[in-house]
Image (tube, rainbow, N blue to C red; front, side, top):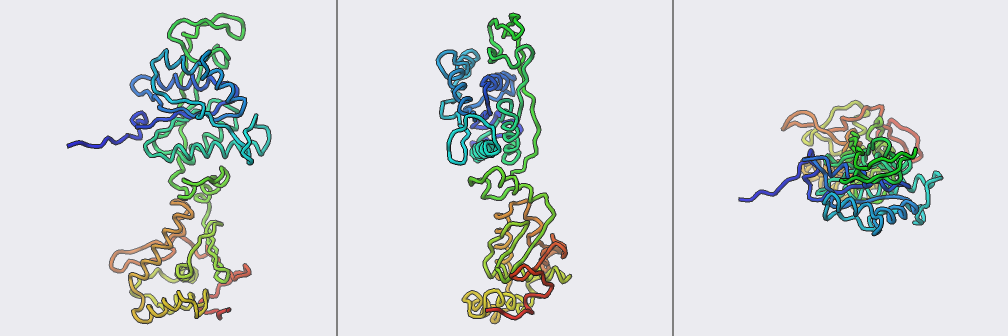
Length: 395
């Protein structure tokens, strides 16, 4: 009998795909310094299969000439010297930061450039973390400070338990020395900035692991797979930390949860408004066996009118059978699923239809919201405490 190997998030080196990702500015040696520290760490060494670098136009030119050319080709030298084979680092893996029009940036100097850098970095982190078989090691040692910040924040938004964040530390006098790329196996004499000869073999390079808060599980599903901006992704994460606020606009057919519109269909919207009105009125949660279907139908009728096909079908079914468990459960499940998809697993919690009590009399309602956190408004934004079921229908 054979067993499938399962990677351990506590040991990123156990993953079948391992990626090193770094930002770089005008000092491409941060990549070789980081790669050296990762691969020479003893039994727990993280030897990547792939390397990605994100940078500006000039940074890409320097990386190409200093790391990937035949001479000096410091990346290839490091791999040969320390027997690091099969690490893929083609030119295509050097990604350029691009502006809103897709033009590569020479440098990051304006607010617009900063936004472009944030979006480019976030997009690549999102892409790499989409693969569950990949363990990502991120180095924020290079580039401008804003680039390092965005990279660390992007990993906080999208990182999984197997992903790591670090900063490379190089001993003096090799730190920031443009001639130094990694500690050599054999003696290699460099001239330090103060004119003294120093031996690259004596350099000490280590990685400082940086803990970070992982927010991925709280993000809406569409942000994990789409192309949303850095700002949009941060806003979604912040919604999970804000005080809940539900605004219902029945005449405008809109449901706003945490300032985000939830696209409920009419049948589900009527059901949700019904539960919200009960919560605002201080009424208890309900079980489908003791439900007054007439209240729900009156709200549904006011939403769509008496001639709507969906309303007619619901009215016929509920008149014949009353409120069934199947009808109740379908509305509840569809609403909750849509709230999770729209707001994310964390931000949606206050707005879900929750249960209380045990079977067979489990009861359901908007138990995560206080009445003061629910605002039921007219189509013109005017607040009303009057239940929709008691208001006349407007054609």
